[in-house]
Image (cartoon, rainbow, N blue to C red; front, side, top):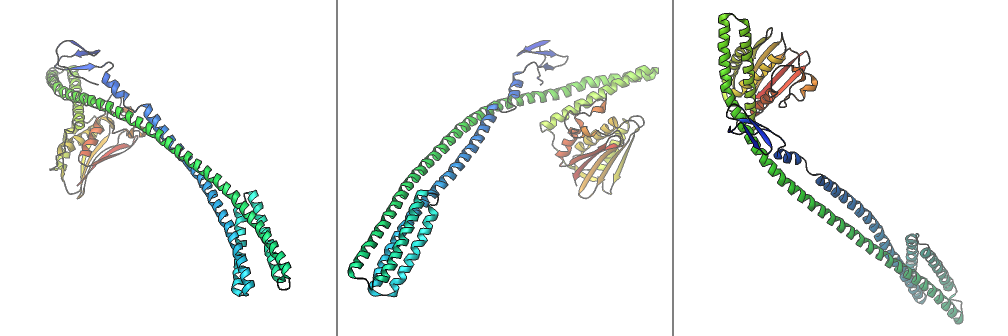
Length: 484
């Protein structure tokens, strides 16, 4: 974290931070424990309570869902039992109604001897036994009711057999005997009526119990869902409060971070411009020293002068990388498409970079295709190519052959920089375009680790793509592709 102050004194104190003022009109703060850093570090992640509350809410939703499902199944079973009780009552009534219809049809047949009444008699008999079979199925899980239904079946069988015997004897039986038979049949009907009444009374009690149990279960289900929903609403409200509070803190931190970024941008711009003047003076002095060494044929002077020039050039490259990164971060670099000769540009770059190749290295340029004019940002393309070629020169190693290739077709523009040097280890390849990342085997070769990241961002600005292939000790090839 960097902060800039105008030079006013040799030492300035601000919020427990010591500012060392250097020769020039700017100084770099060596930060202690910055409150802004504390805020930003604190709010990089949401508080634990947010995650805990979210987990509890999810757990509650799952629990309430499971309880609701369980109670729903229980309620469904109880409703089936209630419906079953109603069906028992309906079938008992149907048995009693069919028995009454049989008696009416029997008396009507005796009085008229009409076959229609006999047919109704047999139909009612079939309905009775069908209802009895249904009753036996419905009450099979209730032993007491099953006993009464079986008793009712036996009573009805006995009555029907009695009626059959009575019908056969009615022609030859005296009036006194007929009266006795009729009385005996009435007693059987009364017994059947009493059994029907007992079954219906027991079933009504059972129905009342089942309806009460079903109502209690429904209320319990509703209370559980309401209570769970209220708990979820309370937790969600608390989470919303925590989230809003966290957003407030983050907005404050974001504003402070923007202010720091603005200060950093000002520093980078200031440093880049302010360093150029003393670096230019150092370079001029080194050139004069080099001339002096040449006049006096002093190899030591020449060697040291060249070291100074190399160090100044490295410093200029570092400043240019930081300045380019800052411009990219702040959106100051906008691509300006224009038509230019890519082949001519590559040839010029090849001529410029030939002077920087190391002893034993070779740099070639090759053009593929018949076209040479492209429509891109010439300045960004130039910087990207120089960066890739410069990397190949620095890292490919001695005796390396570096090949710059341009290919222009109708719908595609491709530029590649290939070398047969030491290559890039597989473990370094995934982070190669990350800012400030440098591969492990670079040794003392100077660099910032920004070059490839800057190239990639230049290529992206022009809607292009950059890819690479590399194998250890077999070389590396970077390829930039753009729509034609």
